[in-house]
Image (cartoon, rainbow, N blue to C red):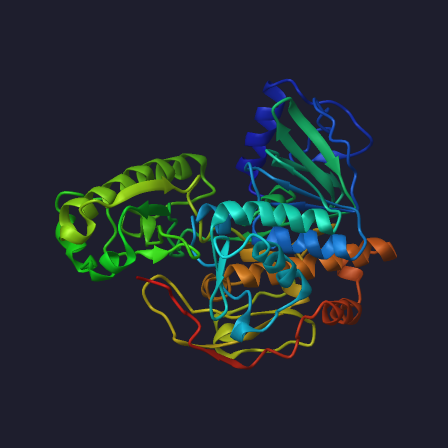
Length: 460
């Protein structure tokens, strides 16, 4: 663990006067257990931290397997980037228009109940009206009897030796303990693994994928938007220096407004989104960027865009890359590019080798081995989503949200099976997990296949 990070938490917890003894557990900062100011009335078998696509997959997977499950999220709603993005597609949910698993299909089923304003299903992706998505996630969680809480931020972990036994969460009434038998880290930034002292990978010399504050636009008919010459935006950079080099308008679900994804902070600078000062700077400058993009379209977009209106910016910046947990095995660029298969495969991933500029249009589907979601040294913990054990390029090749649901599904199911058998996740027989995944409709023979024409973009 980074010593300075541990000292910072130790200093904070000590100076605020909230340290207290408790049940032989300690925080990762080496302090006695924090006394709960607000008791969380659950002690689940499986605690899933982070309610984005990976966390949704993990919570549904664990609860469907019969484990008492609690999903906690720091925001006011579940969905993560899928919900912050204001309509950006949730890729790899139905590859080649085929069901991917019962977990993926459960979320799709709940979305479809709200009609065509809620979701448009593309070649493999879901284009959602995100406010329907937020409710559809709740519907899915309730169907499988998964408990959930929002507005809880995990700020530290409870440790027993090298084993994670729960988390310390920040609430409006202070800090609170949540104990669990197994924790699944779906924070995206590997917060739980980092707090627990697991080795993480995010080196200063690595280029980081940019973070983006997405935006939603309206008041332009689709036929008019299609005629707009977005190349004119390059002429606006002299007056509006924060705008990215290019972007496009894309339809939200089957609605009459648009979402914009773009290269965000790429041209502004490199930001470490785990550093509170840099993250704050990136968030705030991105707010200015959104306004400048709107002004640029109105002033430089000709007759087609002169009346375009800014509807909303995302509730927070969407982060593409931060820490990745060092696992028993680390996925590599070669694994992704060659479609490598593994005997201990528990999911598959596919997507562009996308480093924001250079993309392969043909992508080999590669397996995710169980070893890549197991931290190398910490017990009682599994990882899922973009923080699993992978190199910088391999992470980028498989971070699509449907892939995150898949690794979450596997991690949640592994956690449930481990609890049922009284095992640590690293002691679980992978064959048992694979059998359970197959029963959940997961095709573990996808590795090594080619997936082509996977963009299916709905740009106007």
